[in-house]
Length: 260
Image (cartoon, helix red, strand yellow):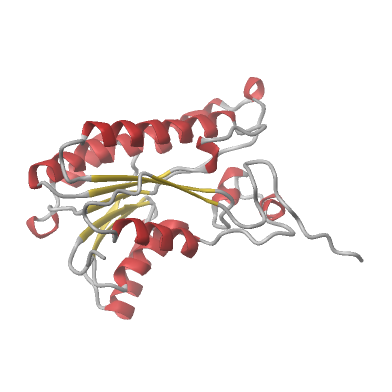
């Protein structure tokens, strides 16, 4: 198993959910963390918590991955001690709405495409050349079961996650001949802020997504990511699909019913 002590790990979307869970599991083994997110206050709280609990070094980037110039500036202006990124975790992503395609909201489409596809591409484009130059590195992209199976109302979101799948596969092919690894981790139902974001803060509607079943947690996904990045250097976990036991496909779930 590869040691992550003092490895520099960049995590996008670090201020909540899977990003925060990844930050904690990596902090626990002594990694140095570059944490990027839009919400500066929550990012600072996370950095302070990790420093107090684990005594690890963190470098905080208040960053919107949709802004290419901001991404370019953030990566090019990293202090020398933080430049040599060993692992990039492209976690920033979201879903907006559950409308039929012909009734879809243009702003929702653009936000999903700009975050899930273009943001991932920007980070990859600005970070991976350094990995190639140093002849080491690992890119982990957060995909989804939605990238494998389309579901009603998921149209554009599913398309963005199918793009993540294709980008991960293409990047792995482009890096053939280097020791750099590429992994796509594709979860099913995970109870995070995901559904609250999808439904624009409608907590009642969001809660119904997970009602009557036991979904994955952010910690479950972080644990799988940790497994992938700590394998022997010659092993590349190309893709992992993980779902709760109560889920068999993107649309097929088992819910316990309660009798009143």
